[in-house]
Image (cartoon, rainbow, N blue to C red):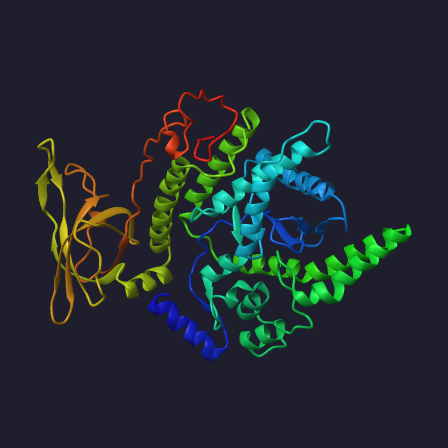
Length: 482
């Protein structure tokens, strides 16, 4: 946690009101997201007890598993709802967006997706292919969630926590009920702290899933399951008990459903950051590629990720994290202020300018490379040669030449490397005026995806085929490009 984040958390704890951590919203928010709440049966595996989902805040769909027997009907209904939503997005040219309450729900969907996509599709079993396809899409959503800056699957606690800081601990911020209460307390409460205390009342608090609370299990769910077992043993009609189960789960999940839409409304009030549009385009491209792959091929990804697939995933994730951090800083003054406290950005007035400086490029052509010096009292941990950006000229790029520390300040000598145009047609707008106050942050890196070997070219020690084995092409590696 940075110094500024610690200060804001301390201030929030002192005043009882959440503090803004960002001025802009840095993830795209769909006009029609698919909200989803999952509750799991007792046990370590992803075996849904109930799923509440939908795109209409006033008409959620509830799918429940039977007391005993297979949960195939629940999964088939869930597959139908999710697939219908995805097809609607495809027809309208938008990428789907799935919003869940917390990070635990993301992991749960990842485990569920792995289980479902590896199930054998059987034409004799109704819904089996749709359920397998659901597993593939859940894996796609959870894979995208691991890439910073993407918006295919977002836990709302993390989304809110990116933009507001409360007076409770980061672990407590994983509870959607208290987090929303801190950010937007009801009118009858005096502060966010008081609202969060009321939200934690055991009599009314409901966990947002996927695990259920012990009190709910012991006092409400287990007695209903026991009554069902007795009715089944006696040969009695079980329909009233199933209706009672649906009513119980609806009452249990409805508060979380309402808070999710409350969180959505809060996030909509924040203006969207400019660079979000670029990431939104990438999201649509990734979705189109995945949809085309399912249409043309559709092989399931293996249960275990091999070495090449891991390398591909890291090669995508790490540059995305760097680019997302740089774009947030370029867009948002609050983010730049936080980076100044960590030495990853600096600001100060321009003291000297060498406006006519030129140098010869690799071809011998004369290049215009203006230089200037900035005086700053911020800690500067950026090394010479590091490419920088400034929010005043988003298309310009700067390079640190030298960093000189004095008793009173730090002098950073900079050179403009991009955005100023050729000597024949110079763009003088990028030249700062003497005394101008500028803020510099890391520039987004231009990353090119390296070449990786195919499965047939990979040694068996790293997940390739055994010696003498001919690849039959029945499985897709998680690193393969759709």
